[in-house]
Length: 359
Ligand SMILES: [Zn+2]
Image (cartoon, rainbow, N blue to C red; front, side, top):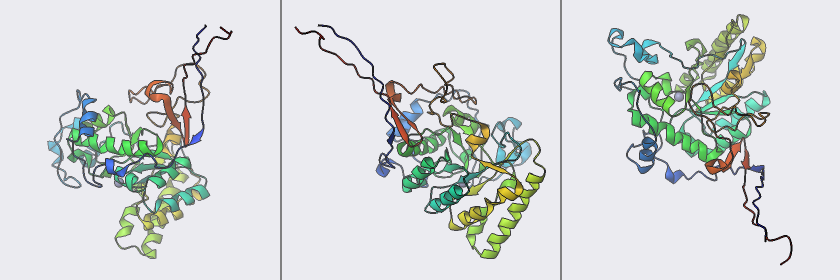
């Protein structure tokens, strides 16, 4: 009798089932900072070595109040109070590029925005809140299915400099789990709520493999968020006119860098704003891209498969200083890795064949 081992690779392109894996009961309460003493968070914390995280104090207030600038050490690099951006991504590399981003979703208004993006044939980056992913998993799935880039905006939208290192981990990892359960994607980019970040927070966020993305400057904050207080057509129209002027001015003299704007898919009025502002790209001669597109990141998730056409070589590293080499997607816990809405399953079968010849 002869025995032999045969490894058969079967690639199944099966549509992932929207939100099937997300069990809302597993997640902490919405919109509050998750506890750090739960078994799940304790497990996450065990895997993190906080060595090298600077010991700047946790701030207070929402948003935090700024102490006298002279009392802050330069190496704290606190964006909210020292206008310090550190190594955060604040521009797109290419001139004339409009990095389009939406924060705080997914919400019941997100599908309208997705319709608009589809009609204009453009992709955006969605910085999603974990609490809202659990509420609206199907809309997150649609973002993935339609080719948009999904990134983190924390679980409860608290200013991160007011949280402990452990609370920051809980905020990011619960959000990461929610997105992973729905899409199979482990996010790699994060935008801190209110842009509130300092070098302590940066260090913790980087321990989790994330790259930080802000918006370029106040000029490119659409301020759409303010429209919701008492929305009127006149205020909406005025906001569209004002932001169009910023985009047109940039388009007239784009310099050597692209811009990253801040908008929200949180309210009806902010989505109405987006519907009117996106077509301005044409008149301003701007090319709209998501953040991964504008950065040219071919591995926009921590568990992205290596780029196609990679042959058999290496080159699976995630890059950008995250320290997260990506797996090869074969074997072990990577036996199932996702590519967009597809699930690629590599199945190794140990086939013990009976003797070919009769005995
Ligand atoms: Zn936000």
